[in-house]
Image (cartoon, rainbow, N blue to C red):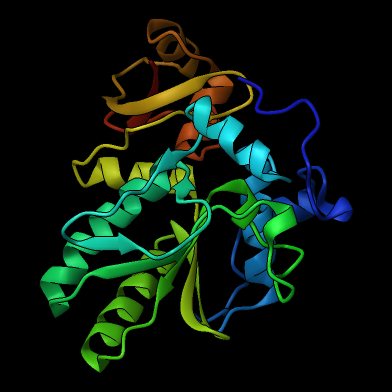
Length: 263
């Protein structure tokens, strides 16, 4: 499903996924993992939004239209987290899964609820100090309140750095106001969750051609090809490559692939 015929990117120079933006997805050699933030980190977030063909929502109406289409889902809070007084308590399905998993571990580790202070923000509702590279208008970003307890801050910062090192998100420690900004890479996070035995459901993940509700794993057998696997599971070679973050068509027996399943 094509999200929108005219995508509303706030940065014309990266309006299309170029070689430069693809390279921006890869951390520079020797670039230490930290929560300080950087321009290269922002470029990676922007490039990931383009790779997923996410729309930069411009108005409140755009947000609610995406909610009605199932492309954004509501985060209502539970015993492990709460959503602060935000205007749009909606995000991509993968973000909801991320919050639910992270908050469960967070409360177990430090005894308090995780607080989400921002989710999807359309371009017309971005704060004055927001970066023009911000991916909040795409629904793949969120902000988390910084706890006053050092134990909770230390746990959350270590966890965010670990997940950043695994390539599933970008995290930045912001000071005005104090919070953690997190930009989730949906496909990478989906692979990470499935490898842990979890699931990502609750809405539609939008690509340019197919709407997915979840994914399943497939172990490559001897003689298998991407074409045969795609045909067998009713998907396409390009979708398999995107879902698994691979560029080559070569497969190895025993290799695990994520198979997108349409709902």
